[in-house]
Length: 266
Length: 269
Image (cartoon, rainbow over all chains, first blue to last red; front, side, top):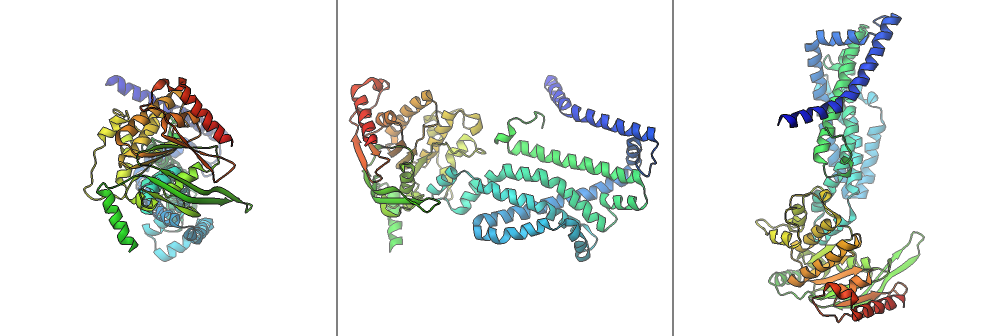
């Protein structure tokens, strides 16, 4: 029991030590360069100053982080649901795909920064415009990958199901949708950091809550430690969310080839 | 009228009045290449397979064996001619789950366990309250103890056993096999052949077995149909009059080798 626990701990250490060491080296270089060069704090604060800033304003930062997280995750979930429904509809017929996919591409190629102010004007200063912006930015990669994954279903498996008189719906649920999971998770890994970008961009244009608005406020006040504090937390949030997707992938896609040579820990 | 006939047909099949013969009459199929050139894969093919007969279809690659198999189970429609299975069209036979299909690739669903894969045919078009015990089938194909394993945890031979058990789980009267052992190693292939014969001997489905291995065809079959690559309309019918059950030292038998030579000659014609 204890031995098992220690083994688990060693695996964890093996997993987290290398990146932590690299980060420590980077931060040390940063810290020393700032101190030696004597660069002003409003240009580039030292990491120690930024970390102290976060610690001394922890409740405020925690609140803003919570707001941004809710917007990002809400937008991600909404975007994924819409994308999967869209993929299922487009999978039904090539004509529907030809009609709908260009619309999706149009939404994708329009810079999100250009649409964000519109959403604020239409939907006000609350959570909804930010969630929608995050949803729009996550929607496209998920849609395209889900569709590609469904189309990549083994033809032997669809032939087998057809030879059993399976309906289109049965083929879709028994074979096509599970076949798309590896593609979906690849899209999730791209989409989850995008959803954070969407939430932050939304906050830039409206409101006084969330890490995006902290950045804007700090920018006006030239308060670089506050700004960098928000940036550090956003980086941490990105890593956390991506780690969660990896963890889920490992446990849901255990049957897929992509999971064979993965790190032991996740 | 046709609908009523279909319903009655379905009922009589369920009541066990089925003769599981396969009749292929005048089936033609051609494909067009990208340059628009026409290829006759099958040209007025005729043959019949009796109930509970084990027949192999032998031919070089590209001669249309797989196309023929897919036409029989209704996955491809022929340009001309028709196929009946026990007197019914392939579509009705599909509805009655009377066709089992085994591919060269086991084509298992990787996210399902062995038992869930075998159950798949029973889940399709499922009636409420329909249950069937398949534990006997699982042990019959030698998979007991592996019920909850996933395909990635199994060897190639075991995956093909799962595929075979899946084809048999709805208890079809007709079993179509498309080079099922071609991707297995020689030793596994040997044992799978005898395993297949043992399975066939218990429920006696009608089997159409596609292969390009002449020895395999002779070892398994009552009859071998040889399709030649050059003439797309010709089928040479060779009766295999070896005693059953077929035994392991058959390869040294003189008649066995004579039959293989006959098939090889027919292939060259």
